[in-house]
Each structure stands twice: as C-alpha cells, then as structure tokens.
Image 1 (cartoon, rainbow, N blue to C red):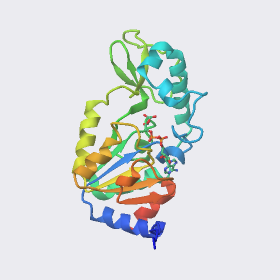
Image 2 (image 1 turned 135 degrees about the vertical axis):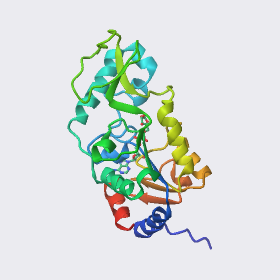
Image 3 (image 1 turned 120 degrees about the vertical axis):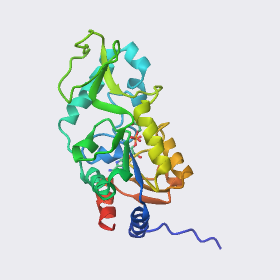
Image 4 (image 1 turned 90 degrees about the vertical axis):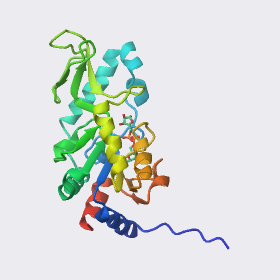
Amino acid sequence: MHHPVEPESLDASLTKAAAILRAAKRVAVLTGAGISAESGLATFRGAGGLWEGHRVEEVATPRAFQRDPTLVWRFYNLRRANLATVKPNPGHDALVDIEKRLGDQFTLITQNVDSLHYAAGSKNVLEIHGALRRVRCTRCTRITERGTEALPDLPRCDKCDGLLRPDVVWFEEELPKDVWRPAVEAAYQCHCFLVVGTSAVVFPAAWLIEAAKNGGAKVIEVNLERSAASDRADVVLLGPSGATLPELIKRL
Ligand code: APR
C-alpha cells in the first residue's frame, strides 16, 4: 500500500532550518516582494498585483517608457509616495539580527526597490533591481538620490534637462554589474542560502538559488506558499516572513 509522506510540521522544519543556519559561517539571503507585504506594500504577482489593470510587465519595460513615459512615471511616483508611509516589519528586523551575528560573512541580496532593508538597519545589502529612491538621467546617465519627494509626471535632469527615469531595472534590461557580480559570488560562496518572499520566476535573480546549490549551500525557503524555488529547497517554511523569521532567530 502507498503511504503518502506526512508533511513535516512547521515546528520540525524550524528546528531543522535553525540547525542549518547555526552551522553556516557564511550566509546569503535573497528577498522578494513578500518580505515587504507585512509592511503594507503589494506584491507583484499575488492578488492585487495589478496596477490600474496593467500587469507589471506592461509598465516596467524600456518599451513602455518609450511609448508612454507619463504612464510609467505615474506608476513609479505612486510607488515612491507609498514608500513614505511604510516601515520595516519584524521580517526585515530578523535579517538585521542575523547580520549582527555574522558580520561581513552575511550578504543580503534583494529584488525589492523599496530600500526597507536599509531602513531596518541591514548593512551589506545588494539591491539588484535598483531603488525607487534614486533617479537616473536618460541623457547624461547621472544618478541622484531623490528619496520619496514628489516628482513631476515627466521629471527632468538638473544638469542637462534630459528626461529622468527611475533607477530601477526593468524587464529586458541587464542587472547592474556592480551589484550582480557580488550577488553571484555571495550565493556561490555561502553555506546557507535563505530565500524569502519571492515567487522565484524572474531571472536572472532566481538563478542565484541555482548558484547557491551549485556551490554546495543548503537552501531554506520562507514563503506563504510553495514557489518555483521550493523543489530546490532543503527546508520550506510556510508562513508569513514577519512571524517565521523571528521564530527562526529565537531558535539559533
Ligand atoms: N511572507 C512571505 N512570503 C510572502 C508574503 C509574506 N507575508 N506575502 C507574499 N509572499 C510571497 C508570495 O507567496 C510570492 O511567492 O511573496 C512572493 C511574491 O512574489 P512576486 O510578487 O512575484 O514578487 P518577486 O518575487 O519579488 O518579484 C520579482 O519581479 O516584478 C518584478 O522586478 C520585480 O523584483 C520584482 C521581481
């Protein structure tokens, strides 16, 4: 007779994950929109993941910006304004805690453009998809910090009057090498790779999980539900990261 395998209880999985994390001298983390969900920011592919009926792939491409920069800037200006109203949650805080234990042996790779990891106090952060708080000139390529201040629908460069764009990575664009290279290195070199709140369907970010596995790391996933990463994870912790990560820290 066929006996289906009982799924491990969350408690047993937490104990297993804590043992992996405790044994790891080098840890790398990959976060996605899910870690900021409990701060009140919508994820991209879940319920409410549409913006005025547009899929994110329709407003976050160079082609969309060429066709209708006002529409794209309206989307990004709303997201920037939204940032001023949100704070890091206990999930972000737990990652600060892990960094404090490991120092420079800890790397936090994030796909998020909300900079909430910095707001929480994380130091070694690689924002591989850029940051909403920065803008970049499409003409002279100068990058400037603009925080969450309100910008016009078609903001212009102070220096050359070129059209500004958000300093984020759009679909079909390459990731900035100065953050991507160290991200690959950190994934490949770590002993434990923690994947938090990402659907793991956007590449090349999701490929970092492969790099970690190839480098011999144990993979721990934290997500509300199973994702594209789950089959490659050694432990899957199902639940909200704002509760699960602090729970994991308690057991270290
Ligand atoms: N705790 C843990 N996980 C959560 C929570 C939560 N509270 N809420 C949602 N999630 C999970 C969802 O189950 C989903 O797997 O977070 C994931 C969010 O997935 P996406 O919306 O696809 O976000 P992300 O993986 O970050 O997207 C990657 O795509 O749109 C582009 O460039 C953008 O960086 C983004 C990239």
